[in-house]
Amino acid sequence: MEKADTPLAQVRSNIALVCKRARRDPGEVTLVAVSKRHEAAAIKPLLLEGHRHFGENRVQEAQEKWPALREAHPGVQLHLVGQLQSNKAEDAAALFDVIHSLDRPSLVKALAKAFDKTGRQVPCFVQVDVGDEPQKGGCPVGELSALIKEARDAEIPLAGLMCLPPAEIEPAPFFAFLDKLARDHGLEGRSMGMSGDYETAIMLGATHVRVGTALFGERPS
Ligand SMILES: *Cc1c(COP(=O)(O)O)cnc(C)c1O
Image (cartoon, rainbow, N blue to C red):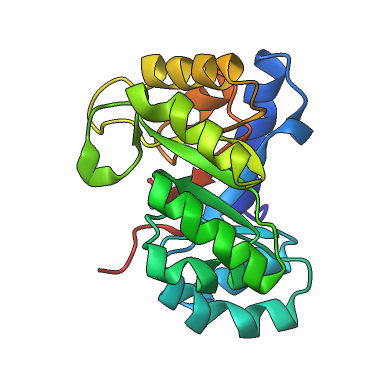
């Protein structure tokens, strides 16, 4: 019997297929493997398969897990996909290579200071609250232009926009909306799509998909 595909090979092949249908170059889509709450033992197989982009949602958990994994597997790019408290900005700047959750003026200030202090300039996605769900974080749509201006004035490198649409309803309109907002603001990156909807997100222009469960199985609670 042939060896079954690994979850990573499966997701990669799905991405390639959707890119073909969307007439997009698969090289434009970064798969961020969201390894939050999974232990090193669950992460290692992906590293051994050559995967290098990983996402975590908590600074402290990432600080505990990643230094050792990174040392053993050079080239890891770590993405922060969860809400960031201003008092953790410096730790985040030191550890992460991309931040997906810049969502308020106070964080612009904290990150600008942290980048100064650490000497690192970490590309940031501005997270947009596309579904009016403030509890998830994200900048209200009406405040987006002002926040982008503040970030640009503070010389924060902007990678693009990120969203986390409401669960349980069709996400496509939200992805299309984020794509439009990114275009309106002259931003390249669109961080959108998770295990249940990354194919739809790619059809609608995602450049970064954040996939956890489809790669690692259910998260331990
Ligand atoms: C956990 C998480 C994901 C991954 O979700 P899955 O449904 O497991 O793929 C993506 N984005 C963010 C912001 C997350 O917190």
